[in-house]
Image (cartoon, rainbow, N blue to C red):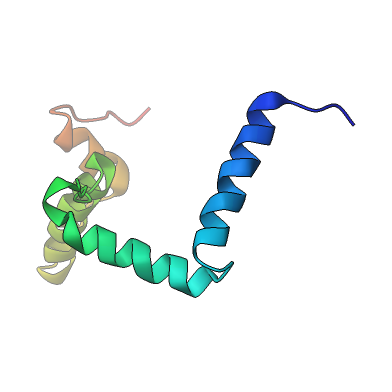
Length: 91
C-alpha cells in the first residue's frame, strides 16, 4: 500500500486530538459544544430560506383551494392560460 504524506499527517493530527480526550468521543463532543457556546458570536448560522418553487406552489395552492371552495373551478389548461395572460383555444 502506498503512503501519502498528507494523509499520514491528517491521521497523525487526528490521533493527537483523540489522545487529548482519552480517546473518548463523548468528552470530545462535550468540549466542542463548550467551545461553540464560548465563541457563539463568531459562528455564522444559515437561516433556511424556502425555495422559489415551494413559494410559488404555496401561492397557487392557496388560490386554487379558495376557487374550489367557492365553486369557481376551471380546467387546469385554461387556469394555466389565464395565469400567463393567454387563453388556449380548442383545436
